[in-house]
Image (cartoon, rainbow, N blue to C red):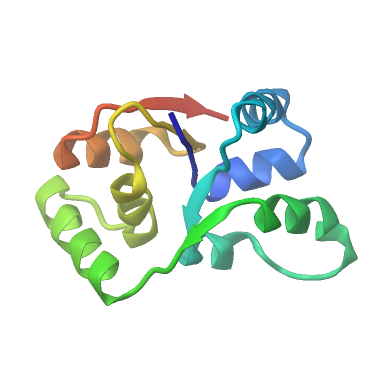
Length: 125
């Protein structure tokens, strides 16, 4: 199981959310790192000293490029699911069966993972 983070998960971590911290502790104890993509980083990163905690979390996160291939796959998924957030679609595509997506946007992610045929757990923060 891998944790897959959307922007809401990172923002919850910054706020000190206990659920996100507990999931990260379990992930680290198992020798795993969370996964996200560069588009999510763009949604949450503003720079500066106030994001020191986030910077440390990002340093230990697998960040997949949001390249042309993932972008096209996300676009196809959006069309199939009837939604419009390409960043969320790419998050859904990063998840594999058995992974856990940590999100603040249950509605969109639920539709996207269902349409993508992924069997994942959604944890709402």
